[in-house]
Length: 283
Image (cartoon, rainbow, N blue to C red; front, side, top):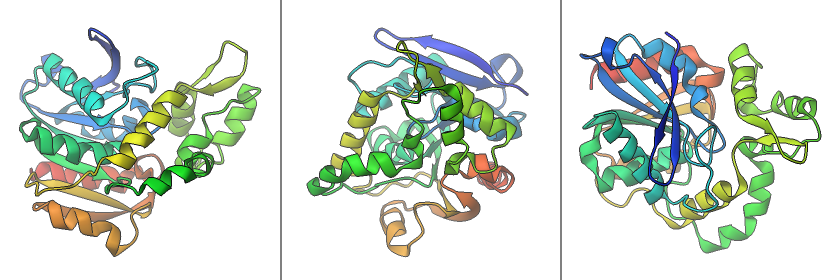
């Protein structure tokens, strides 16, 4: 089942999203919200959405500053992102949902769950980043981080589409350069007014998201929502000490290892999809 691209027009922002199995065909199915990571967009969930669409009403938004959603110069705090998502759920008439977040949104979910647990049937964290509050000194290294992270290497600018494509094909999220990965790349890039090519993800969003990621702790009190932590074998959470905050604060936690890197849904989707399906079936 192919998703449908839709748009929610809020008072100050436009949220573009993909929808599988809309209400007229899914009155008895459970809602599932899929949130992408930094510099990605909703299309990364194509394999998972297609795999689960028969049993769930699925929505995957482009987060603000990403993809086809609005790109204001300010407004990229966790609280503003959460407000967007709550507005989207209200628009969909969802009182709650299974909610999955990857990387940066994997940190956003526990913050949201602390504020408004009523929105969560369950929570799926896919290789989340920087769950703790980061030391202020870390800010000095951000320019280096921006150059080193694969998800940001594709931002550009590039002198030509060919140059952008050549760079993308070398990045971890596109390992294998499958037809879906090429589609994800093509959907996330655009030609700029000066003729150069670059990501639809904008620099103000990058800077402000990283600022909030550093200064806000993701886990500070117990959360008893059923939670699946997906740990890719070549992801960013490989050490026992990295898992300890989740084990301490998430009292209903299930950790599952899957093949692949930080983007298992793009590089090893079969096992990833099955892992998510099995968790959802019991929650």
